[in-house]
Length: 167
Image (tube, rainbow, N blue to C red; front, side, top):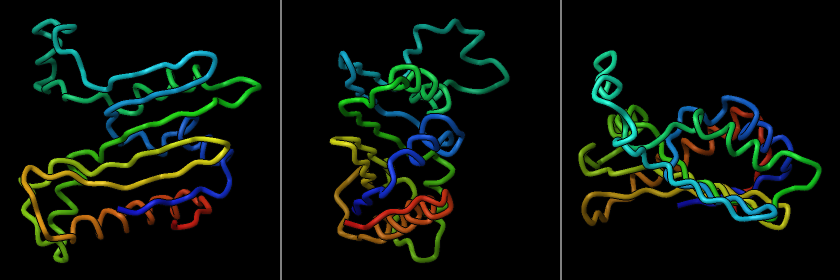
């Protein structure tokens, strides 16, 4: 687990809320505090859909919403002249990223043992911090997944041309 302090908040917020930079991620939860506190549970409520929608194009409705779906809602809650008091976004890497990471020769953990690769984004007191994490289906001593995921997030932030400090 690593924490990355974003040096410049505005460019990060533009990428997070007004571009497709994080759209591949899935949303576990979001909490935004402005004039009220808004909570979004990213778990899809399958009862909302009818049978045709659930099997449309032979695709199965995933268990979590994509950030691309939730992002416009968050943008509407945050936009304005005043910055939010705080927010927290918990994102999961998509399954394809998890599988690619597990296929890396440096990874010593079987794919089916990796439950999720997590990116926690926190904004508080004008500062943004990105914190990596991982969860497994059982206890694992091996830290190769954590090292690889930390490096993946670091590369992602660098590719987005965001300045950050590892804290």
